[in-house]
Amino acid sequence: MSPIVFRTSSDLAPTGRRLLALPVWAVLLTGCAVGPDFQRPPPPANAAFTRDAFPAATVAAPGSTGQAQQFLAGVDVPDRWWTHFQSPELDALVQEALKANPTVAAAQAALRQAQAMVKAQRGAYLPRVQAGYTPSRQKDAGESPFTLHTAQVSVGFTPDVFGGNRRAVEALRASAEAQRFQLEATYLTLAANVVTTAVEQASVRDQIAATRAIVIANTRALEILRRQLAVGQVAGLDVALVEAALAQSEQQLPELEKQLEQSRNALAALIGRLPAEAPEHQFSIDSLKLPQELPLSLPSQLVEQRPDVRVAAAELQAASAQIGVATANMLPQFSLTAARGGAAGAFGQMFATGNPFWSIVAEMSQTLFAGGTLMYERKAAQAAFDQSAALYKEAVIAAFQDVSNTLYALKSDAEALNAAVRTERATQRALMLVQKQLAAGEVDALALTASQQAYQEAVIARVQAQAARLVDTAALFQALGGGWWNQARADTVASKD
Image (tube, rainbow, N blue to C red; front, side):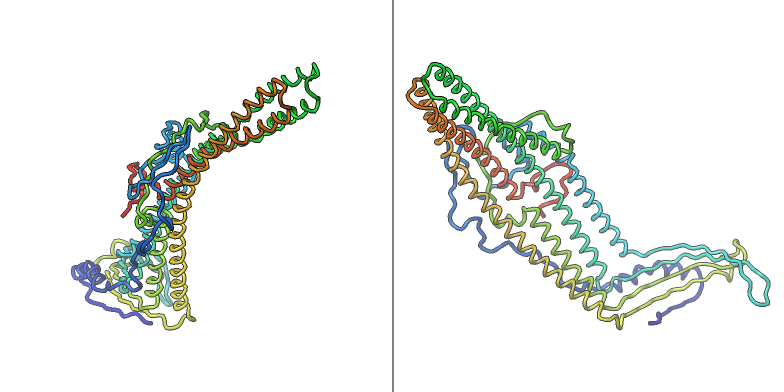
């Protein structure tokens, strides 16, 4: 379509006034924004974390990490939740990981990129000013060669009549918001991984200690049996059975030591170090205290607190805004351009009397046929919104599932530890009795081997049950969102609003 051109006199003062009036025209030509106005989905109605009433506290068990844990309904999740394990070494590792892990640096860079894209798109709100100078040497037919100097300043503006640019800015702003919460999710996941890896290291170390204790006990029993064999009090088969039990216990040590080294390497990677730079400190179960008071946010607050749900909500808003962008592309497009310049055969004469020129051009264009491209682009945007809506719902369901699973895990962990401690104590008493009976020649080596095996399995089960309580406690803090909205660190980038 041909542009509609408006021209007036070439007086400089009126031209300047008209150039200054260009933003006013832009305001008058700026209308409403087409497309849906986004509303964040409300929290699930009548939502609850568990199907039935959940107990206010877990059962208790004797020994380390055996305390009962209370669930404090409606209490906010604390910031720096990992400090509730009361380990200065763990606190230091988490803080180092939050600063030095490459994943954090990548997420921060992605956020800066998204924020820069928002600012770049906002530039379309303002006029674009360009300056140009063109010297040329030319010759027309029958004329002598001559030089022409042309210089001009132009101001162009595309009024956002139907809000396409505003929707584009909205989409980019929502994408930046998603990156903000993605960064918070990175912080949360990283802190939880450090805690979990430290607990796993503690569990493996205690299992190694228990296995070595069994090796020592088997070694002593074997020495007794060999002395008895020398005087004919026991058969060679009894000695062979204890030797087999000792070898079996020793066989387990290399695998556990491998797991210990892998946990050290994992901690090194989490804090941004190479394996050779792994932290010297190694955790044990007794060095980590079990938090006894656990916050339990209201179910209605979970969708506000979980970074992954907030990411899904921001992506849903971006998809909604893209519908507006696609709709605006189907409507007429407007532009305004004003130019002021001069042309002359000599550089110094370009703005002499009679040489300056100016123009003001208004243009409206409408796509009449594009093979259905614009229509299908809008349909694609609507389908993308539907997809994002489904993904948001999936994120909400997964969030409630995480909390529910973790609550039941904590309840079961406490019961399992209670049973594991009782089993360990019973098998320990049985082993001590068998050892005394063996020394007195009242039982054979087969009874000792069975008792030692039962006790070893009971000790390892108890250590694993202790570790499970610590790991699932960290998982509950993570499932509830990690308290990022209460954090005061300088690099916190997301707010609860």
